[in-house]
Image 1 (tube, helix red, strand yellow):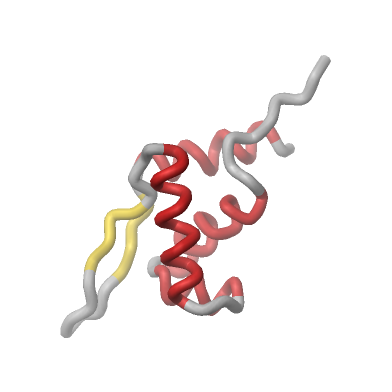
Image 2: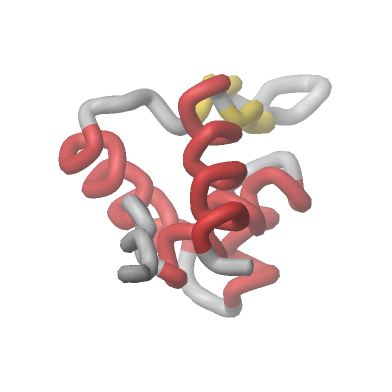
Length: 85
C-alpha cells in the first residue's frame, strides 16, 4: 500500500505548530529562530498556495497583538499528523 503524501511540508507544519504554541507570528519566529519577516513571507506563500487563510491576525496595541489559527490550519495540522504517524 502506497503511503499518502502530506498536503503541507514538514517546514510548513513546524511553522503552523510554532504559531499555535506561541500565539503569535513573532513568538513563532523566536521558536524557529528566524526573522519575523520570514515567518510572514512563509505564511503568505502557504495561504496563496493552498488557497486558505491560516491565521486570524490581531495587530498590537495596549494588550498586544496575536494570532489564532483558523479551522483550515487546524485541519492541515490534523491531516499532517495522521499521515505522518
